[in-house]
Image 1: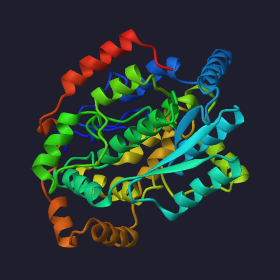
Image 2 (image 1 turned 180 degrees about the vertical axis):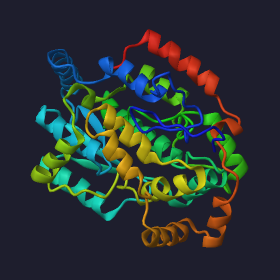
Image 3 (image 1 turned 120 degrees about the horizontal axis):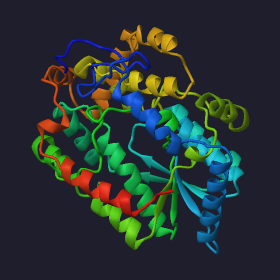
Length: 372
């Protein structure tokens, strides 16, 4: 997508495959510079974070007095959400586990969720999307030739969590999102999932059906749940010394958790999109963002990251099998898949969107509120 002279950051491994990337005179990119600029306010700070976490837990427990649950946790069977469930139990919270089922669960992730619920003694609820409707939405994003093919899922997850929290009168949703492992991601690789104008344009111009049951979650819906229902999102992993490798070891030892092979591979569709479609169609290797974040967090080295990136993100034989499976499930022929893959790559700026409006709304919100 980029016509710039190739350049790679001298500190992390982000490069000009991000068309908006900038570099300073040391060769450091804007992503790792921004990471370190924000890290002081976003990650574990010892006793200060301990006090903040204690206060948050007290607030959550108080809000859940005389209720069956005091918080909701969205769980995918992946590392972060699974560890959040484990940690919440250790902190004495009474969460309701909620899984947003979009039809793409891997067998390993399903087993992980069941093990976590059983071994932690937690109740579990599934929010199942209408498959025919959701399939159409995913196909619309694919046909639009934009990288945000996982936006439909990123809309449905918070919509499901907030809806269920409201139904149970729960005021807190604990997210597995965290700055340590997810601090770097270019906007042109994954644009704002809360842009309803962008979503509706894609569906109108590339979708085959109108949506009827799919839950929207734009800024209006978020404002409703925050202001009217009083629901808050808590990123609890930002308040503990979180290490992904240590979290994996704990989950494997204590909960019988199994690794699924890569970041977000708990979903068969997400795994295929990130390992095959994005690098082949958009020259986007999601591993760069993940590895760059890990470099900044001290969990890997630049040399090891470069070594990993020297290998393709997929194995040809496995990718062929996954392609056939994806096409069959989506109801399209492999020839149609290949035609879409060969269409010119687009980004969100090529379609109508509310970027400026949303940037303004959320900048005002951040000034008026300090989220947990």
